[in-house]
Image 1 (tube, rainbow, N blue to C red):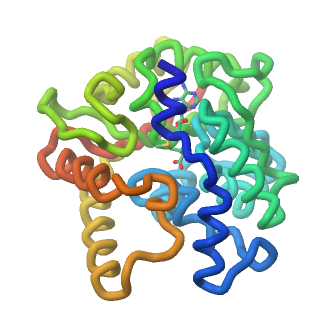
Image 2: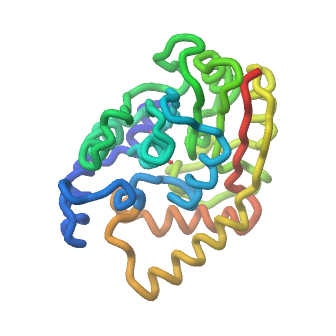
Length: 273
Ligand SMILES: C[S@@+](CC[C@H](N)C(=O)[O-])C[C@H]1O[C@@H](n2cnc3c(N)ncnc32)[C@H](O)[C@@H]1O
């Protein structure tokens, strides 16, 4: 299953692709800045806008050690490091994303604060109670054992730490059309109900402090994106650089699922007792 997931996201040659796109807008690896990379480094509904609003609920502080579970190319990790001054350690199953993400952090001078590593959310390579906060953005749709995930995150966090989840959750069993950004087919898609997280969190020693359904935000975000693309063309730095030719179909199927009420982007913020 892990191999299927990293093959689904695998994106060989990603750094070359991004550099070509940067040069098309007059940027190089020496002149690019952290926000310039957000369009490709934030692989989830709502991109940087969603990250800002989500991360703001986690009370992150300078000097904290923060875990980004399923960090991808590290867009959210670089945002956290550059805005909160926290040290972010990202873990991801896909080696291509980890390699490319670390290089992107070097380009923008954040490699001292952001370190991405190859690894699994279900077997975190950290000591018990060694981290100050954790978050996970659009990853749980690939992890079927939510209880084990919550137990593992709880193990590595100190008491009082926040754990934020921003995922697509199921509202009904209605069929989605595939592919979607996180799954090539129904078998790969293990998006669950919010209550599965709520049970996993409670059993693992977390208190749920907030939930927020981001459906309206998401539909508005994609409406604005469509209008902007129609008026100005597709931006050079975007998710098409990693999702390739299937980008339109994958996003279209996901948006149709949100519109129909089968799935919704949901935030859950919990605190370890
Ligand atoms: C849709 S991407 C989101 C990436 C990143 N969180 C973001 O928002 O830009 C999902 C990521 O989760 C990673 N992933 C899926 N299952 C994982 C697991 N069990 N452990 C670690 N990473 C995982 C994938 O490799 C992929 O990079």
